[in-house]
Length: 182
Image 1 (cartoon, rainbow, N blue to C red):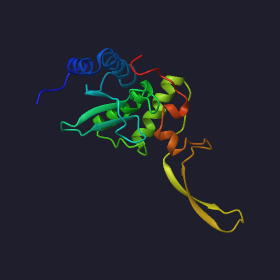
Image 2 (image 1 turned 180 degrees about the horizontal axis):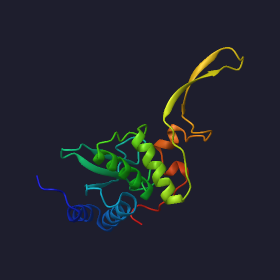
Image 3 (image 1 turned 90 degrees about the vertical axis):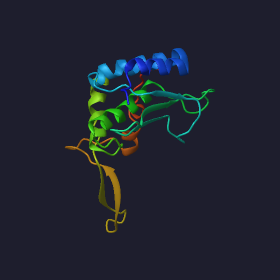
Image 4 (image 1 turned 30 degrees about the vertical axis):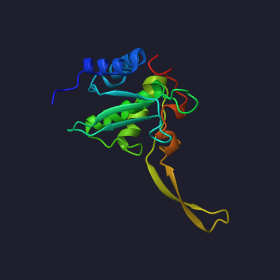
């Protein structure tokens, strides 16, 4: 099977979604150079007008060594519901880079947390802490009974983002990268 090239990526996106598709690939290229050193392999980019993923606005489906590589972003025809933007594209590209490295791409993985901390600093010039999810025993209100809760591990007194914030980065941290393809 022939390798999927950047030219293939541009042709596919332009044929399927016209100027928006081409601009989205150009943004993927820009993000690839800027945030990943140009190391990501071209993948088909799909812009979906339906909501096939429930509450998700994007999905990276990637199976290294096979033909199952694709990034899908959701732009409903009437924009009344979920709407992917360049932040969603970057989010899905993090999944892609982790898959290409052979690292667990899940939101709870060390690789995911390291990438969002690296990118957050690169984009905002400020640091965040994304600690691993742990369980902790807490005393109840009566000071005696305890219960187990799940938190994200702090670092030297620095509070971690919560798991939901980690999973929704960059949007959960207020980073706005513009309209899809803009």
